Amino acid sequence: MSGRTWPKAIGLVLAAGLLAAACGGSNTPSGSTKYVVGISNTLTGNGFREEMICSIKAQAKASGIVSKVIVANRTTDPSGQISDVRSLISAGVNVIVMNPSDRSALDAVIKQATDKHIVVVTVDQGVTSSTAYQLYNNQVKYAELGADWLFKQLGGSGNVVEMRGINGVSADADRHQGFLKTVGNYPNIHVVKETFTNWSLDPAAQQVKDILGSGLKVDGIWTSGIDSTVVDQYVTAKKPFVPVIGADNNAFIGQLANLKGQGLKGAAVTNPPTVGGAGLALGLDVLQGKTEPHLVNLDPVIWDNQSSTGLSELQNHYDPKLDAYYSVSYQVSPWTTYTKADLLACADV
Image (cartoon, rainbow, N blue to C red; front, side, top):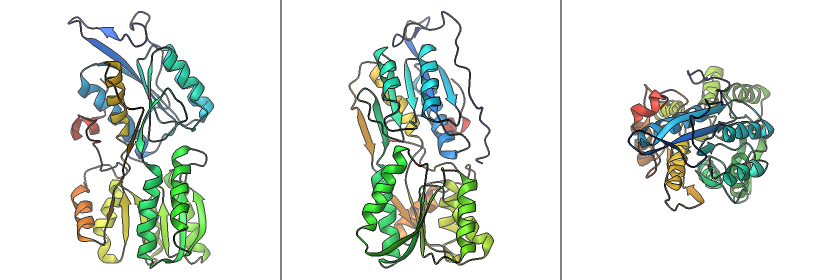
């Protein structure tokens, strides 16, 4: 979908004697400590997750203190992720960066890791674990920013569609909460359709096709980040655009900048997948004895194509050479230190 191919899973068994005890790292000839990084991801074929993994690899390389990155990357459920995390623990990693598939189901396995002095950092979504470090976008505010802009664009009245992510995961639940809270401020806004895209292009495309073919009156669409395919379906169907809210994905950013003259109104809310690299930076700080907060919440911003400042942001961030489904927010200040070239190379340490 994103133009990149990823393995279903990468082997997790390391040669005996390669690693020291967890949290101890390995000693190089110069005497400096190097660490082994584990990544746990449960959704493949998704540009956000691909860029997240690449940002972890890029930050690992830029840090100069990582000897190896082990990736558990497959589409699976919480039980599968628990199995993957246990494999990473057995492999002797020093830090695990994970995008959690459930808010609370992973707490026990996270504790298993932290009991062995492995630093666990959850990114993109929150968990109820008291031992994990967490770094993610404020997902409630993500929804509120986009929904409020959309409803104001409609003059406070109209029929809207809410296109959600994956049912049951914390980011989706938080965004839904923010969306509903904002709807409550607009009594004449009516949610006429709610879908779950699973943050995948094909389901989202089919859902929009079905909506367009149904004759349902729709005045605006809020999406949880699967956005450019919504615009594509309107183009294919030769239907007049309705205002669309999405994320800072390159293809959608380009549509907002380039199709404004054809009537497209919309806005992108930032949700950087490079929280992965930022999460690793935080974890490496902790391994080196630095004190970091257990929760880092990033505040999203919104870029719309109706204001001069918003349009300028869209035009400045769009990169026609960048993968269509990559986020244009490739750094998370002050955490990430790699270059854009490092991110796009997505090279192993």
